[in-house]
Amino acid sequence: MSKIGIIGDLHFRENLPYSEYVEDGRVGEEREILDFIVKTFEDCDEIVLLGDVFDKKNNPSKVITKVVSFIKRFDGKKVYIIAGNHEKTADGKTALDFLRKVNNPNWNIVTNKIEVIGDMTFLPYMTKPELEVDDDTAGTEKIMKELKSNRMLFLHHAISDSMARSISTNIFSEVVLPKTGLEKKFDLVVGGHIHTPQVLTGGKIIVAGSVFNTEANEKRKVILKIDKKTLKTTDYALPGISIHRLENPSVEDLKKIDKKDIVRVIINDPKMKNKLDPIKKELEKIEMNMILEQYPKSRKKTYTGKDLLNLSVKDLLKIYAKERKVDEKKLFAAFELL
Image (cartoon, rainbow, N blue to C red; front, side, top):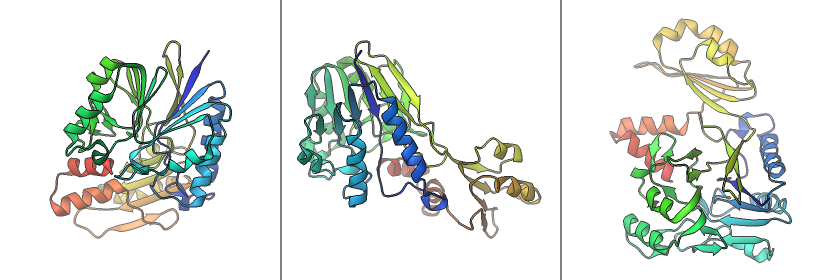
Protein backbone atom coordinates (compact mmCIF):
# COMPACT_ATOMS: atom_id res chain seq x y z
CA MET A 1 0.00 0.00 0.00
CA SER A 2 1.59 3.29 -1.13
CA LYS A 3 2.04 5.90 1.59
CA ILE A 4 3.39 9.45 1.69
CA GLY A 5 5.27 10.87 4.68
CA ILE A 6 4.72 14.59 5.27
CA ILE A 7 7.20 16.79 7.16
CA GLY A 8 6.34 20.40 8.04
CA ASP A 9 8.70 23.33 8.49
CA LEU A 10 12.02 22.08 9.89
CA HIS A 11 13.91 25.39 10.05
CA PHE A 12 17.28 23.71 10.41
CA ARG A 13 19.78 26.03 12.09
CA GLU A 14 23.03 25.64 13.99
CA ASN A 15 21.28 25.34 17.35
CA LEU A 16 17.67 25.22 18.46
CA PRO A 17 16.40 28.22 20.46
CA TYR A 18 17.10 27.98 24.21
CA SER A 19 19.92 25.53 23.47
CA GLU A 20 22.31 27.53 25.66
CA TYR A 21 20.11 26.85 28.68
CA VAL A 22 19.93 23.07 28.26
CA GLU A 23 22.85 20.88 29.30
CA ASP A 24 23.38 19.21 25.90
CA GLY A 25 22.28 22.24 23.86
CA ARG A 26 19.08 20.41 22.78
CA VAL A 27 21.26 18.27 20.51
CA GLY A 28 19.87 15.03 21.93
CA GLU A 29 16.31 16.28 21.51
CA GLU A 30 16.91 17.23 17.87
CA ARG A 31 18.44 13.82 17.16
CA GLU A 32 15.53 12.03 18.88
CA ILE A 33 12.97 13.89 16.76
CA LEU A 34 14.77 13.23 13.48
CA ASP A 35 15.22 9.55 14.35
CA PHE A 36 11.49 9.35 15.14
CA ILE A 37 10.58 10.84 11.75
CA VAL A 38 12.81 8.43 9.82
CA LYS A 39 11.53 5.43 11.80
CA THR A 40 7.85 6.42 11.42
CA PHE A 41 8.21 6.78 7.65
CA GLU A 42 9.93 3.44 7.05
CA ASP A 43 6.76 2.15 5.32
CA CYS A 44 6.39 5.22 3.10
CA ASP A 45 7.36 5.22 -0.57
CA GLU A 46 7.41 9.00 -0.90
CA ILE A 47 8.42 11.86 1.40
CA VAL A 48 7.30 15.50 1.09
CA LEU A 49 9.11 18.34 2.87
CA LEU A 50 6.72 21.29 2.89
CA GLY A 51 9.26 24.12 2.83
CA ASP A 52 11.53 26.10 5.15
CA VAL A 53 13.85 23.16 5.51
CA PHE A 54 16.47 25.85 6.16
CA ASP A 55 15.82 28.67 8.61
CA LYS A 56 17.87 31.15 6.55
CA LYS A 57 18.68 31.94 2.96
CA ASN A 58 22.43 31.65 3.58
CA ASN A 59 23.63 28.85 5.82
CA PRO A 60 26.95 27.70 7.31
CA SER A 61 28.43 24.35 6.33
CA LYS A 62 27.29 22.78 9.62
CA VAL A 63 23.63 23.40 8.77
CA ILE A 64 24.00 22.37 5.13
CA THR A 65 25.60 19.09 6.25
CA LYS A 66 22.77 18.54 8.72
CA VAL A 67 20.11 19.00 6.01
CA VAL A 68 21.82 16.76 3.43
CA SER A 69 22.46 14.05 6.02
CA PHE A 70 18.79 14.06 7.04
CA ILE A 71 17.49 13.83 3.46
CA LYS A 72 19.92 11.02 2.67
CA ARG A 73 18.32 8.95 5.44
CA PHE A 74 15.32 8.46 3.12
CA ASP A 75 17.45 6.45 0.73
CA GLY A 76 15.38 4.54 -1.82
CA LYS A 77 12.30 6.75 -1.41
CA LYS A 78 11.07 9.52 -3.68
CA VAL A 79 11.69 12.83 -1.90
CA TYR A 80 9.95 16.09 -2.84
CA ILE A 81 11.35 19.30 -1.33
CA ILE A 82 9.38 22.55 -1.67
CA ALA A 83 11.02 25.96 -1.24
CA GLY A 84 9.71 28.09 1.62
CA ASN A 85 9.85 31.81 2.30
CA HIS A 86 12.73 31.58 4.79
CA GLU A 87 15.08 30.07 2.23
CA LYS A 88 14.08 32.16 -0.78
CA THR A 89 15.23 35.55 -2.11
CA ALA A 90 13.03 37.95 -4.05
CA ASP A 91 14.66 37.01 -7.36
CA GLY A 92 13.74 33.35 -6.91
CA LYS A 93 17.11 31.96 -5.81
CA THR A 94 16.93 29.62 -2.83
CA ALA A 95 19.06 27.88 -0.22
CA LEU A 96 17.91 24.61 -1.81
CA ASP A 97 19.40 25.20 -5.26
CA PHE A 98 22.65 23.34 -4.47
CA LEU A 99 20.68 20.11 -3.88
CA ARG A 100 20.13 19.79 -7.61
CA LYS A 101 23.89 19.36 -8.06
CA VAL A 102 23.77 16.21 -5.94
CA ASN A 103 22.05 14.60 -8.96
CA ASN A 104 20.04 12.16 -6.89
CA PRO A 105 17.33 10.82 -9.24
CA ASN A 106 14.95 10.36 -6.30
CA TRP A 107 15.14 13.99 -5.18
CA ASN A 108 12.69 16.49 -6.68
CA ILE A 109 13.56 20.08 -5.76
CA VAL A 110 10.64 22.47 -6.37
CA THR A 111 11.71 26.10 -6.01
CA ASN A 112 10.31 28.56 -8.53
CA LYS A 113 7.30 27.15 -10.34
CA ILE A 114 4.28 24.92 -9.92
CA GLU A 115 5.21 21.34 -10.70
CA VAL A 116 2.82 18.45 -11.39
CA ILE A 117 4.05 14.89 -10.91
CA GLY A 118 1.27 12.39 -11.51
CA ASP A 119 -1.61 13.08 -9.13
CA MET A 120 0.55 15.36 -6.97
CA THR A 121 0.89 19.13 -7.47
CA PHE A 122 3.68 21.08 -5.73
CA LEU A 123 3.58 24.83 -5.12
CA PRO A 124 6.66 26.53 -3.60
CA TYR A 125 6.52 29.93 -1.93
CA MET A 126 6.23 32.54 -4.67
CA THR A 127 7.26 36.17 -4.21
CA LYS A 128 5.51 39.06 -5.96
CA PRO A 129 8.56 39.79 -8.18
CA GLU A 130 8.57 36.14 -9.29
CA LEU A 131 4.88 36.33 -10.08
CA GLU A 132 5.41 39.70 -11.80
CA VAL A 133 2.61 41.34 -9.83
CA ASP A 134 2.47 44.49 -7.74
CA ASP A 135 0.17 43.42 -4.93
CA ASP A 136 -0.91 40.35 -2.95
CA THR A 137 -4.38 40.15 -4.46
CA ALA A 138 -2.97 39.96 -7.98
CA GLY A 139 -0.50 37.33 -6.79
CA THR A 140 -3.30 35.21 -5.34
CA GLU A 141 -5.32 35.48 -8.54
CA LYS A 142 -2.35 34.52 -10.72
CA ILE A 143 -1.48 31.44 -8.66
CA MET A 144 -5.10 30.26 -8.55
CA LYS A 145 -5.35 30.67 -12.31
CA GLU A 146 -2.18 28.62 -12.87
CA LEU A 147 -3.18 25.84 -10.45
CA LYS A 148 -4.93 23.10 -12.41
CA SER A 149 -7.23 20.59 -10.71
CA ASN A 150 -5.52 17.48 -9.39
CA ARG A 151 -5.88 14.94 -6.61
CA MET A 152 -3.33 16.36 -4.13
CA LEU A 153 -1.68 19.72 -3.58
CA PHE A 154 1.38 20.34 -1.40
CA LEU A 155 2.31 23.98 -0.87
CA HIS A 156 4.18 26.57 1.16
CA HIS A 157 1.71 29.45 1.24
CA ALA A 158 -0.79 30.74 3.76
CA ILE A 159 -4.35 29.50 3.27
CA SER A 160 -7.33 31.64 4.21
CA ASP A 161 -9.35 30.82 7.34
CA SER A 162 -6.36 29.17 9.03
CA MET A 163 -4.72 30.40 12.23
CA ALA A 164 -1.10 31.27 12.96
CA ARG A 165 -1.36 30.70 16.71
CA SER A 166 -4.02 33.33 17.62
CA ILE A 167 -3.82 35.33 14.39
CA SER A 168 -5.98 34.70 11.33
CA THR A 169 -4.12 34.36 8.04
CA ASN A 170 -6.92 36.44 6.51
CA ILE A 171 -5.14 39.60 7.68
CA PHE A 172 -1.67 38.58 6.44
CA SER A 173 0.10 41.04 4.14
CA GLU A 174 1.19 38.39 1.66
CA VAL A 175 -0.24 36.11 -1.00
CA VAL A 176 -2.93 34.09 0.81
CA LEU A 177 -4.70 31.37 -1.15
CA PRO A 178 -8.48 30.97 -0.75
CA LYS A 179 -9.64 27.89 1.14
CA THR A 180 -12.81 27.41 -0.92
CA GLY A 181 -10.97 27.80 -4.23
CA LEU A 182 -8.41 25.15 -3.27
CA GLU A 183 -11.14 22.76 -2.13
CA LYS A 184 -12.77 22.98 -5.56
CA LYS A 185 -9.53 22.08 -7.36
CA PHE A 186 -8.09 19.36 -5.10
CA ASP A 187 -9.25 16.37 -3.08
CA LEU A 188 -6.55 16.96 -0.46
CA VAL A 189 -4.41 20.00 0.30
CA VAL A 190 -1.46 19.88 2.71
CA GLY A 191 0.34 23.10 3.56
CA GLY A 192 3.46 24.29 5.31
CA HIS A 193 4.43 27.88 6.24
CA ILE A 194 1.99 28.20 9.17
CA HIS A 195 3.52 26.65 12.29
CA THR A 196 0.26 25.76 14.02
CA PRO A 197 -0.96 22.28 12.96
CA GLN A 198 -4.67 22.25 12.09
CA VAL A 199 -7.37 20.73 9.92
CA LEU A 200 -9.61 23.33 8.30
CA THR A 201 -13.39 23.02 8.23
CA GLY A 202 -14.42 20.35 5.74
CA GLY A 203 -11.33 18.23 6.32
CA LYS A 204 -9.85 18.59 2.84
CA ILE A 205 -7.14 21.05 3.91
CA ILE A 206 -4.47 20.24 6.47
CA VAL A 207 -1.78 22.55 7.80
CA ALA A 208 1.14 20.41 8.96
CA GLY A 209 2.79 22.94 11.28
CA SER A 210 6.48 23.03 12.21
CA VAL A 211 8.67 20.29 13.65
CA PHE A 212 10.64 21.73 16.57
CA ASN A 213 9.36 23.69 19.56
CA THR A 214 10.90 27.17 19.37
CA GLU A 215 8.37 29.41 21.13
CA ALA A 216 6.37 29.25 24.35
CA ASN A 217 2.99 27.49 24.51
CA GLU A 218 3.09 26.05 21.00
CA LYS A 219 0.63 23.29 20.12
CA ARG A 220 1.88 19.73 19.90
CA LYS A 221 4.12 19.03 16.94
CA VAL A 222 3.16 16.32 14.45
CA ILE A 223 4.16 14.62 11.22
CA LEU A 224 1.60 13.16 8.82
CA LYS A 225 1.22 9.99 6.83
CA ILE A 226 -1.12 9.79 3.82
CA ASP A 227 -2.58 6.59 2.40
CA LYS A 228 -2.24 7.41 -1.27
CA LYS A 229 -5.15 5.18 -2.30
CA THR A 230 -7.77 6.53 0.11
CA LEU A 231 -6.17 9.92 0.99
CA LYS A 232 -6.74 9.08 4.65
CA THR A 233 -4.27 10.98 6.84
CA THR A 234 -2.79 9.93 10.16
CA ASP A 235 -0.79 12.23 12.41
CA TYR A 236 1.99 11.19 14.76
CA ALA A 237 2.91 13.35 17.75
CA LEU A 238 6.60 14.19 17.79
CA PRO A 239 8.75 13.81 20.88
CA GLY A 240 10.63 16.82 22.23
CA ILE A 241 10.84 19.44 24.94
CA SER A 242 7.88 21.78 25.44
CA ILE A 243 8.35 25.46 26.23
CA HIS A 244 5.91 26.97 28.74
CA ARG A 245 5.08 30.56 29.64
CA LEU A 246 2.96 30.93 32.78
CA GLU A 247 1.65 34.08 34.44
CA ASN A 248 1.18 34.02 38.22
CA PRO A 249 1.05 30.23 38.42
CA SER A 250 0.30 28.13 41.48
CA VAL A 251 2.56 25.38 42.77
CA GLU A 252 0.04 22.90 41.38
CA ASP A 253 0.39 24.46 37.90
CA LEU A 254 4.14 23.90 38.03
CA LYS A 255 3.77 20.30 39.19
CA LYS A 256 1.95 19.50 35.92
CA ILE A 257 5.02 20.42 33.83
CA ASP A 258 7.50 17.76 32.75
CA LYS A 259 10.77 18.22 34.64
CA LYS A 260 12.72 18.15 31.35
CA ASP A 261 10.72 20.98 29.79
CA ILE A 262 11.56 24.68 29.62
CA VAL A 263 9.40 27.06 31.64
CA ARG A 264 9.28 30.84 31.97
CA VAL A 265 7.22 32.24 34.84
CA ILE A 266 5.97 35.84 34.86
CA ILE A 267 4.86 37.30 38.20
CA ASN A 268 2.93 40.55 37.71
CA ASP A 269 0.32 40.28 40.47
CA PRO A 270 1.47 42.15 43.63
CA LYS A 271 -0.59 39.72 45.71
CA MET A 272 1.84 36.96 44.67
CA LYS A 273 4.84 38.58 46.39
CA ASN A 274 4.33 36.67 49.61
CA LYS A 275 3.77 33.34 47.78
CA LEU A 276 7.00 33.22 45.81
CA ASP A 277 9.11 30.94 48.02
CA PRO A 278 7.11 27.72 47.37
CA ILE A 279 6.81 28.67 43.68
CA LYS A 280 10.58 29.14 43.36
CA LYS A 281 11.19 25.89 45.20
CA GLU A 282 8.92 23.96 42.83
CA LEU A 283 10.35 25.78 39.82
CA GLU A 284 13.87 24.64 40.71
CA LYS A 285 12.77 21.04 40.13
CA ILE A 286 12.35 21.81 36.43
CA GLU A 287 15.55 21.45 34.43
CA MET A 288 15.40 24.84 32.69
CA ASN A 289 13.48 27.57 34.46
CA MET A 290 13.19 31.32 34.55
CA ILE A 291 11.12 33.65 36.71
CA LEU A 292 10.50 37.33 36.13
CA GLU A 293 8.86 39.66 38.64
CA GLN A 294 7.24 42.49 36.73
CA TYR A 295 4.84 44.40 38.95
CA PRO A 296 2.91 47.45 37.68
CA LYS A 297 4.62 50.75 38.41
CA SER A 298 7.50 49.08 40.19
CA ARG A 299 11.08 48.25 39.46
CA LYS A 300 11.51 44.98 37.58
CA LYS A 301 13.37 42.26 39.41
CA THR A 302 14.45 39.10 37.68
CA TYR A 303 15.37 35.63 38.90
CA THR A 304 16.19 32.56 36.86
CA GLY A 305 17.20 29.03 37.62
CA LYS A 306 20.51 29.79 35.88
CA ASP A 307 20.62 33.58 36.48
CA LEU A 308 19.33 34.37 33.02
CA LEU A 309 16.89 37.01 31.85
CA ASN A 310 15.10 36.06 28.67
CA LEU A 311 11.96 37.84 27.60
CA SER A 312 10.00 36.09 24.87
CA VAL A 313 9.56 37.67 21.46
CA LYS A 314 5.87 38.10 22.28
CA ASP A 315 6.73 39.97 25.49
CA LEU A 316 9.06 42.28 23.60
CA LEU A 317 6.43 42.93 20.93
CA LYS A 318 3.87 43.79 23.60
CA ILE A 319 6.27 46.31 25.14
CA TYR A 320 7.01 47.81 21.72
CA ALA A 321 3.31 48.06 20.84
CA LYS A 322 2.55 49.81 24.12
CA GLU A 323 5.47 52.25 23.88
CA ARG A 324 4.88 53.10 20.21
CA LYS A 325 1.08 52.99 20.52
CA VAL A 326 0.63 50.58 17.62
CA ASP A 327 -1.96 47.84 17.16
CA GLU A 328 -0.71 44.77 19.02
CA LYS A 329 -2.52 42.25 16.78
CA LYS A 330 -1.15 43.80 13.59
CA LEU A 331 2.35 43.80 15.07
CA PHE A 332 2.02 40.10 15.96
CA ALA A 333 0.75 39.39 12.44
CA ALA A 334 3.74 41.20 10.93
CA PHE A 335 6.10 39.16 13.10
CA GLU A 336 4.45 35.88 12.09
CA LEU A 337 4.84 36.90 8.45
CA LEU A 338 8.57 37.56 8.91
